[in-house]
Amino acid sequence: MKGKKIMLATVVMAMTAQPVMAFGAESFTDLAGFDWAKPAIEQMAAQEILSGVGNQKYAPSANVTVAEFASMAMRAYGGKDAVITLADEQGNLEEIEKKNGEYWGNATICAAQKFGLTYRFGTDKARWSKPANRSEMAAIVMTIAEQMGNETFEIKRGIESNIGDHDPYVINHYEDLDYILKAYSNGILCGTNDKGDFSPDAYAKRAEAAAIMQRLVDPSKRINVVVKHVPVLTSPLPDGSNVSESGIVYPKEGDIGPNGKPITRDPITGVLGFGNGQKGGIYLGLKSLINGNTIKVGSGAYDSYDNMGGDYREYNGYIFWENEWAMIKNTAREKLDREHPANSTPVGTQADIRGNIVAKGSPDAWFEVIHAFDVKIWDSIYK
Image 1 (cartoon, rainbow, N blue to C red):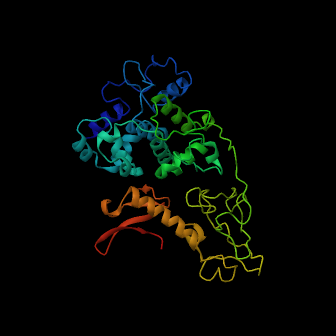
Image 2 (cartoon, rainbow, N blue to C red):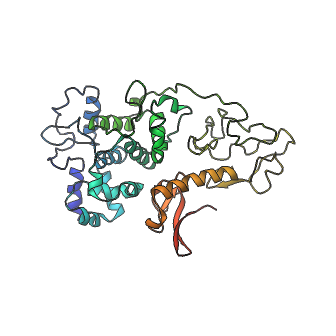
Image 3 (cartoon, one colour):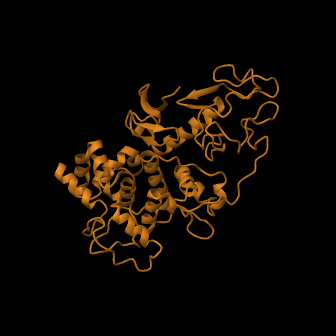
């Protein structure tokens, strides 16, 4: 099997109906009209992140498939052998090969299990051979970037104002919304026209895929995204969350949090600090302006503070009020129930705090499929 796997690694970026050239072996002759993408294509080929389709062709105008794009993203972080290395770690390549027959993307599908992508796309070659739309691209690239890379990708407050088709098109892609906002905020996958439309259902070309890979490996190539309209929020905040009995907000958006970053409101759950990855508790240690009592973790904290509601609790380094935890957990469970119903998901499968599938045993795991009363459910690891 080892020899067969190595062969697969050499063809993983090939179009299935065409022979493949070696990575970066020669100049592509079909880049006329793609001057904007040519440097990215040639640089990524030279770094063995992508390859052509044979006969000195790159096929820049062809739609990039799910398998091709996922392969590129894995190589962007793990090098040219990343796909085959990850497939070896998963250990069930033969099973996938038996199902799909001779298909260059079998190793990519196998490797993608590590990132939970097979829960989204399955393991059948027919799905992985289809063109990837931009919503799917955002999910693929940000999932792999966050699990394989060392960067933290944050969502800029007010970024929705930059996205011309945010309402109703982008927000209808709820399962990918977090990924789209992160990709857009960080200049990796942005607008398609002067209105800033993200065009989530549009298929992306191989030329665009090369540019995205270049932005991943070279931050200097990322698009500089300046939020058009950063909302100015007053106290109390519109939805009334995190507001004390006296109507004072502790703290407010824009303040600097414990990790030195501005506190933002998560665009999906609405919880302050959550979308910006704040840990340690943005309210911990603050004193009530009414009675001087200090917020602390544990039961009874709210009684002595200002009736902000519920205890202030810590789970895996994150600290929020009980009512905030309810919003976070319910949002994740709703996503899991929609995308990965427990009754059709293997026992032991784990997901992170956002409801994204992660490798079993990952330090980011928050939920797990268990048997309870003869049925399978998604259960919280942290009670």
